[in-house]
Each structure stands twice: as C-alpha cells, then as structure tokens.
Image 1 (cartoon, rainbow, N blue to C red):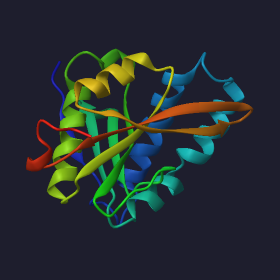
Image 2 (cartoon, rainbow, N blue to C red):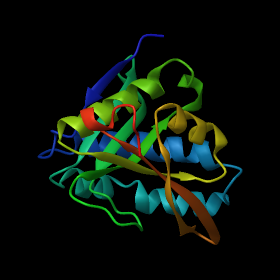
Image 3 (tube, rainbow, N blue to C red):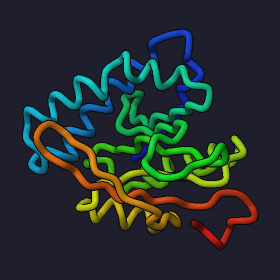
Image 4 (tube, rainbow, N blue to C red):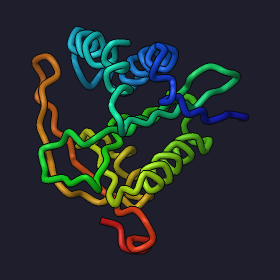
Length: 184
C-alpha cells in the first residue's frame, strides 16, 4: 500500500497540524485500548489528552516535532517528539517520543518502522543523544517493535486513566554516531 510521511510541526501559527493530530490521536488510542481500559475512562482521557488545545500547546514547544503517516491524504498514524516528561533523570540531550501510533489495519506494511526511523533521525538531527518513550507494560507487540529498533528498558512509571492505574515501561535508545551499535 502506498503511503507518505508528512512533517507537520512547522504549522505552529495555524491549527492544521493540531486538528489533524486531535483526529488521529484519539482514534488510535481508542483502537489500542478498547477492551483494556473502561470505555468511559478512554473517552475522558481522549477529551483531555487528545484535544486540539493539547496538541497545539505541545506543538508550540520549541523542541516539538510531529510527523503524520498518510494514505490517500488521510492520517493513519503519527509520531510526536517533545521535551521529556518522564519520572527519571533526563538532560538537554534527551527527547521523548511522546506518541507513536498507527491504526491497526495499517500495521505490518512498514509505516510504523518509517515513523520510528523519522523519529530517530529527527531526534539525532536535533543533536539529541537519547530517545525515550513510555509503553504500556502489557503491550507485548509494541515492546517487541521498540526492542527491534534498539530500545531497552530504563525505568517504569504508573499513571491513572479514570479508575485504572496503568503501568508503563520507560524505554530508551542512544542516538548518534557514538551510540551506533551501543544503544541505551
């Protein structure tokens, strides 16, 4: 299937990127967590954590970068890089892959790997030395995907979605020439 990647973080002055992310974000979150979390908790989470205002605020951050995966011009996945907001020690050399999602029917076609390559290459081009992310500790498919891309566990975190306490693994990988072959 033919697809394209489109960076959209440069649209800081308009709502185009934030609006698109606020469409694909909750759709992919719902698809990933329906049956894992309570429906009303998912909906409340999406209203607050996937709103146009939330994405616009994130995109206004100096280090924010976003990329959309599109099929026939429609968003089917995305990646979002931000300054780390994780419960572990970070430095200015770190960046967080805050979100990387792809609708399930488009998985297995290379788009997820393309979004990950974009994330790693973009972070490295920004001069970052480590890329961090959080992943639900029960999402074995995603964990395996991240491990194939060189990520290893560097911490854990807990957070609440409605009444459910969720546990994440925090994964990291080294970036740049000095870390090629020695990922963190």
